[in-house]
Length: 536
Image (cartoon, rainbow, N blue to C red; front, side, top):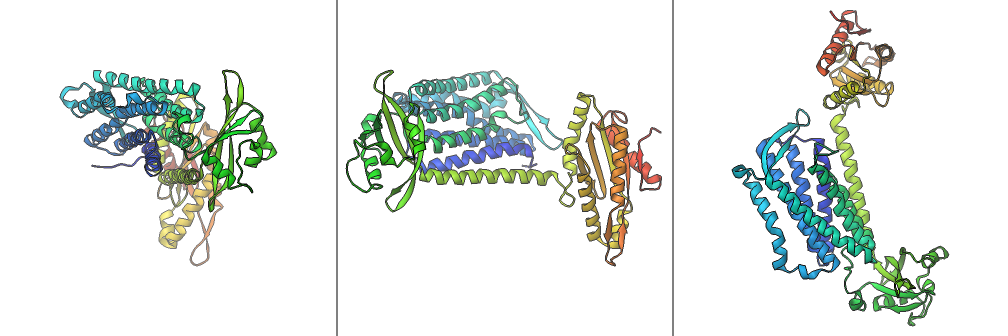
C-alpha cells in the first residue's frame, strides 16, 4: 500500500477531524439525550465518508483506492436513514421508531453495500472505474455509473427530503427555531453539493464537494449543539415535564410580572437574592438584575436571548435565557416564556473546540506553506512550480496575454562554496531569494529550481518589461557583498535568461527550454548579463 500525500486530501481530513470531535462530544456529554444515538451514527458516517475520500486520494494503487472508496460510500448510504430517524425523534414521531419499522429503512443501504463490494461480478453499481491524474503524482477514481447507482441516489434523496419535510413543518410551529434551523442547515448544505456532484457540476473538482462541505456541516451542527442546545431540550410534551426538568422555566405576563416558575428556576434565582420569598408576582427585571439596555428584550414581541452569570452553589455558572413570546390565542399576545439554560460546560467546550479548529487551520496553513516553500530562501520550490506553471500557461492562453519567464543562475557558485564555505553560500542564496521576492509583484512567482538556479514567473509582462526587470535583478545581485572567513568582501554576480509566452514558445516544455537556452547564452556572453532567447 503506497501513500503519496497531497494537499488535495487536506479538506477531507479536516472534515474527518471535525466529525470525530463532534462524535466524542456526544459520546462524552450527550449520549443519554433523545436523538443522541442517531446523531452519533451520523457523525460516524460523516467521519467514514471523509476519511475514505482522503485515503482514496493519498493512496496510489488502484486496489487500495477502490477499497477505501467503498468504505467511504458506506457513510452516505446509511447517513440519510439516520438523518430521517433523527428528524422523527426530534419532531416527536416516535411511532415510526420501533425496531421492526426502523430496520426496514436499512434494507436498501445494506443491499447497496453488498452490490458495491461484489460489483466486479455484475457491474450494477459501477460500469467501470479508471484512474485520472490530478497532478503527475496524484490520481483519483473516475466512476462510470451503473443502473443501481440511480436507485441508490433516489432512495437517499427520498430519506433526505422526508427528513427535511418533517423538520420544516416542525420549524414553522416550534419556539426552538434555532435547534431546528441548525439541523436543516446541516442537512441542506451537503444535499445541495451532493446534487452538484450527481449532476457532475462540481466547483471543487477533483475533490468530492459533498465531502469538503462536511467541515461546514460540522461547524453548523456544533453551532446548534452549543448555541441552541441541540439535543439538550427535545420539543415534546413540555407541559408534562415542566416541573421535573433541571432547567429553569418562567412565564412572564405582558406587564413583565412572573406568573409561573418551576422549582429549578425558583431555587436558582432565590439563591442570588437577599430573601427566600416566592418569586411569583415579582417584576422579572428585578429578579434577573437586568440593566436598562436589556429591558428592550421585553418591549418587543420577538424571540431573543439573554446571557448572564449567576451563583449556583459554590461556583458561578453561565446561563443563556431564551425569551420567547407567548400567545394565549392566535393573535393575542400574553407575555413571555423564559427558559434558563446552563451553558457553562458548553461555553468551555466551545472555547476548546474553537481553539482546536483554529489550531487545525494554522497547521493546515503551515503544512501547505512548508510543502511549497524552499526552507533556505523562502522562495517557492520546484513542486509548487510544477503545480502553478501549467495553470499560468493556461490563463495566459485563455486571456491572450503574455507570460514572462526569467531564469537566473549565480555565477561561479561552486567556487563560492569550495573557497568560502557552505555557510557563506547559504547566505548568498538566502539574500538573493529575499531580494528577488522584494523586487517582484504579489502575483509573480519566484521559484528556486535547485542549487543556485531560480525561475521568476511574471504574468502579463511583455518582453521589453521583462528585460528591464531582469536587468534590475542583475543589478540588485551585483550590489550584494558578503564577508568571508577572512573578513574580505565577496562580490557576487548572476547570469539571466529571458523568454516570453507565446512569443518564444507555445507550450510549457518549449518555453522552459528556450528560457534555459537564453540563460546559457548569457553565460557564453561572459556572464553577469541578461540575454533573451533567439532562434538559431
